Length: 155
Image (tube, rainbow, N blue to C red):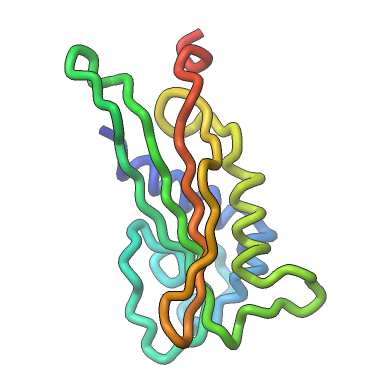
């Protein structure tokens, strides 16, 4: 399985998107204006909530699950990506934008990943998009993508 590869690739795509980087607007001192510094400061390769250490910030968390593994041919499998965009309540509103920070970032992620053929066999399709409250300080939007159309990837 290539779960680690898929997560690393996704993190690189996220920091390569200038709209997402600008919207994260990292408050972490380690950021220093370099988008690659967002990895493991604001963008994490797991759904584990980072140690926030009092920083009111925006985070992107992810998981990659493999489903429908074929015992006869384990190369062909379905991938499910889960992405959470998490923001402190004091950072939800973006100046000059009509969307909340989590909605804006989630929309950019959907534009970036919808129909992508870079994860597993087949194209990614958004199958669920929901907003949830983590606690009194943080709200998040959770996106679920799943691969489909395996035949296209094999042609």
